[in-house]
Length: 581
Image (tube, rainbow, N blue to C red; front, side):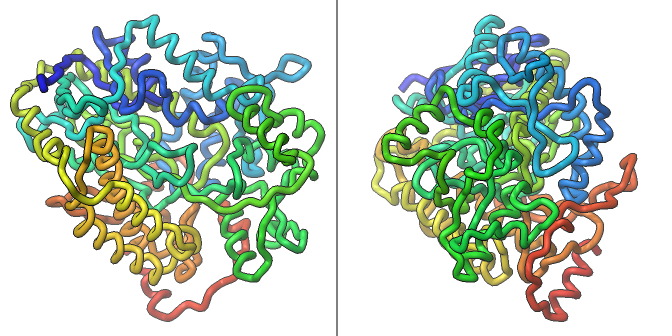
């Protein structure tokens, strides 16, 4: 088929929240901006399924106070320069949304209505009104702005290679991929490239079926460095359906109870109870199941009337969901429903500077593709991160594209990079779904994803290596749609390997990473960083430069919880003590 060629100043890969913000910002400085997404034109990304709430530092508050609380919540594992820039820019992006018509809830006196998060004193989110329509309306608002500014959007295109100026090293100057319906090759020349794709997940629900790791694979192959890959986003969810909003319901008095009716999180943290991060709640859930106190229930009957009013969906997919449940006899706010843990995405991402620039010239990362999360989460925090880092990356990438020399770009060389992927079309082989299922099964056990142990992680890594070496090379695709699924399976395999190796290397517990065989902190905070070394995942430990930060970690959120200690060998104690050596 005749290839499709595009040329642009700034190429944005991913059309969700962060990609939209990056393109909007880039359009203020560049002549031409192009968004490329593997989904349909108005699919909108994961943000469409969100509540549209946003974490913000209000203009009357001190950024340093919020930053210090974030350091406490992250157990010291905080990239303070990048976090500060996110917090400093949060209110401006919030004001942009309001100016463009996105409505946030207000109190009777006109003040902004917010919900404090994770039983913290300052960090909060402001929620969309009417509740239930926020995610789709955020997308509509951003897409309207994109159209007004003439940003081009290219849909149904899976990019499989980032193109460099000299083939292997040097500056990123574009990307190559294929149309997921026709199979047509697509080559794009760009002055700068921004990855806005989410690092990757595991297709564990219809709420997160598409963010599986191809963006991370692009960055990894190009030479970007990754961080925080040992942190997995665990979540709690109903066993029989989906529901959005627990980050608001828990502060309003909802709770988790075991089969004996006990509010069991009060046992593990009298300070926070179930108002804490989901990872702490999930540890409690697994321990309760071990003790034979399952099934576990989410109890909304203890919520305040104000909370029920605030969190009752009034539109969007949430209202549709609520109405269907009522027809089945499930009145969500007037009964207990059975809930369970569910793992979703990798929290880590590419290491960037405060301009969201990776170490690869010409390549930027924003939103969940970049590394800021450290395994714990607050409601509205993703909307904050995607908007601010997207805006920052867009401006920086556009300036680099417009001010730098015109890159050398060879279309025929770019097309040749597609040959390995396109050669898999219309051939017999292993179906991508079989690889996905194998990765899901090795990741699910509690000793791999919640209460990690060296034994569980090593067992999973051995299985993962067998999948990587034996199944992945034998995959093939009957048509372009399944070639897209094949690329997703490859990306998922890569991020699973990065997760397992980083989890094994971190011989301590901190934030959302809990090792039963190393249940305490090992000392000063350090990052596990990963990159591509001759096609293999390479790891190293890098101390967080707290000596350069204006204030040092002095209290830790994890200390507010008390889980049963496991017996530790002398070898484990020595390895913990030498972790940062």
